[in-house]
Length: 74
Image (cartoon, rainbow, N blue to C red):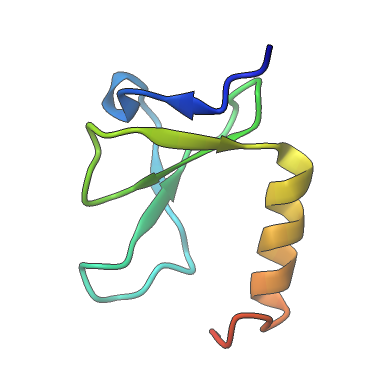
């Protein structure tokens, strides 16, 4: 069965802040590359909290939508 969450995201190293996170301190997500079960995503304000693992295809579709302006960002 594929993992959907990581209970303590701080137990893993290599997190990077999303380039699409806001410049204000309160709205940042971090992602972890190279995880075999998908793309772990966590809230940078809660590094010891859980991370959700998003299937790679769904993550690619989400990033494409963000880049395409679907959420009113950049």
